[in-house]
Image (tube, rainbow, N blue to C red; front, side):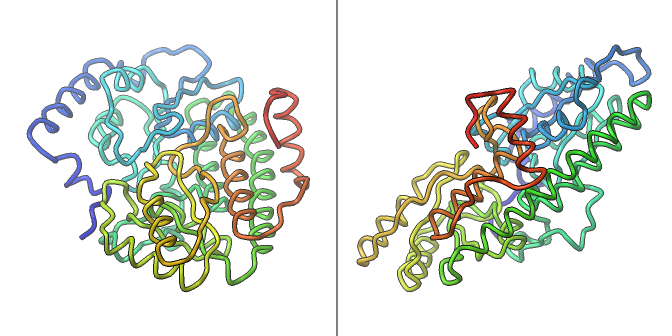
Length: 345
């Protein structure tokens, strides 16, 4: 079995790790006041990953204050909650997490929070029939749902509902912001489909370090191959690398991709292996997989993250990227550019 985000393996990895979680759980239980305690506006929201935090900001607006535990370049598969993280969650009104074992090493702490805080898994409203269940992942679902924009819009609806229930006085504002954001996501979804479709059919294969892009490939018509499995806890073998080299050489694939949150050594090994077989292959660019870009940049938003990946993949594999973005997506980008003039298109 490939190593994955299996809580029974990761959370109980050893006595020292178990002891650490016990301490963190104790902090969570003792530091958090009950839900009934009086709070002041705005609603304090903690999200485990940046993709959730950004959607929460879009829907919550001025009525929420959002903190993301994991920032730029952080790998959630390997992340361990610190005592500071536990205190931050304990002080929150709402804790949002992805689930599907993405935050496997934080699972115990998140469960402890549920007794005293509103804790919501943003993917739990998605029909299980729509979730990927890779055979090598031993019956678990692929957690990287955000790479299918249509599915991630359902996660946004879940966040809206959590906010409205927790803060009914502003439920109408959350609903209005959610509808506006849904239009942007629908436009982004359409843009991704149309843009990826410009890649020549025999080049529609993307190779990355770990298997984070399964939903992306399924949604937008790309064959996805990765050196590592769903979790970066898995190790790439020489056999895995050589098998991928065979594919890249035989199909004359023009480019492979590195990821912002994963070391590039295995991708460099692919490039070297292809070169030794007489096939020059390029690094097509850096993609955002388990973390977004730098805060304050367009890539530091969910929409910008997906847009960057779509355009980078399309250019590297021989497709055509439109100069302007249509409809609600274009309007979103104009508004962001007006707020942050240094952001790119």
